[in-house]
Figure 1 (cartoon, rainbow, N blue to C red):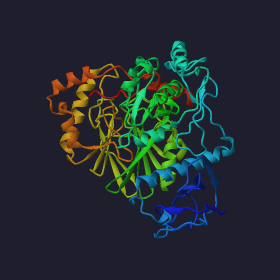
Figure 2: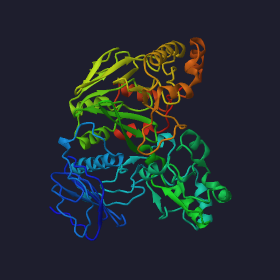
Figure 3: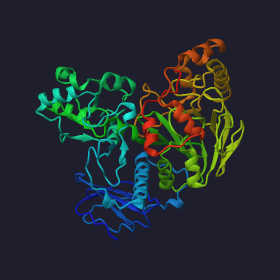
Figure 4: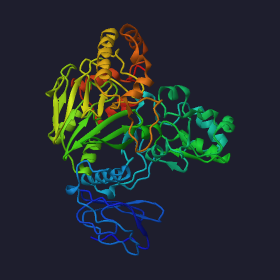
Length: 537
């Protein structure tokens, strides 16, 4: 098979990665995944100079030539099998490889020809994003959960009066969603934390906004948009947000009519909830990929060396981790949960079953299924390296920390970059607070201040930057959390009373993670909607 892209300029880096997919974006070759590749700079190239209009996918074969291209100098691509397991890679290259692996997995499941829609509501119970066969933000059938107050049949705002008011203001558009310019959740995530970050305006009602919002967003309810035009950013692009993209589409019309550069967040908070991005780092012999659930504040990890990988704190969407491992040529041999999760459904058991990996959990937290027990001081071999288990009860009695060669600590929900885990979820806050104090002081007294803290969650105050891990040195955590220097009684009293309301659907999620109940993917997504509430600071 030959891909011919005429009259384009080739530029990029050489990375030959395993898999059967070539991903083509409107004349732009974004990823080359497959056997021997013969194209200028090597196995991964970019062809620039064409507007991206649609996605095409070509399965299998080799890329043999790019017609009319000017090849930049570069070395031939090195096969994935020949690259060192921890070879340095650009974050962008890693991201492209993961996308290609995701495309391969999707194409193995269904015919990409089935993906032709450009729908908003499929019906009033199920949501579909702009459907692009290999798009990283595609989530067919994402639920618009009625259980948490999301859009209901007959309208997409919390009150019909808003639709009527906006119809009057913008020209009778309440009955349909207007065609407006959009930005995907993935595109928005790539801008936040950079010099090109847009202003965010959330047009949901105040109670919806207070319950859960994108950090940095400003709340202007749909009914108030017309009267507050003067307060909306005039000197930069505005991204407008609502629950599912319907109210925000109408608000965009009003803002644009007033001369404001506004675009709609396609899929709204539902799309934001489904978004993952990644960041790559190296710790001694380990390559570490941090997966960030941007709408949930959840962090999980794929840790690899010598071609073997350990996945830590995976979410229920286990394909995310399979794709990372496939993109890098790693075999998943171990899966670990650092604690019994209360705000999201763990994918550890399913991922271990799908890969044949060993499932490692602490017996200090209840489970009703088989696993390999973690104990303090245990060493988990990974290739020629090991990760050491450190018992860290407090957030839960079974909480553990994983020490990566002394250079980094996967701290779970024991220690965050700007806080500590809450000790009250089991309704024994002082008892668990005492344990938490001892665990934290063990970490602070036995590990170097240079050790990198890699937590399982982050809060709204933490700025997330594309391709940069959410992490900090232990010394910086000391400075950010002065309570770590308090004496025991003062700390325990503070931690026991500091926590806010429990995570949404806390009881149902814990029962799922214990193994007492089961749920469909749609039910899990509905249960998980909402912010991170695992920190006491």
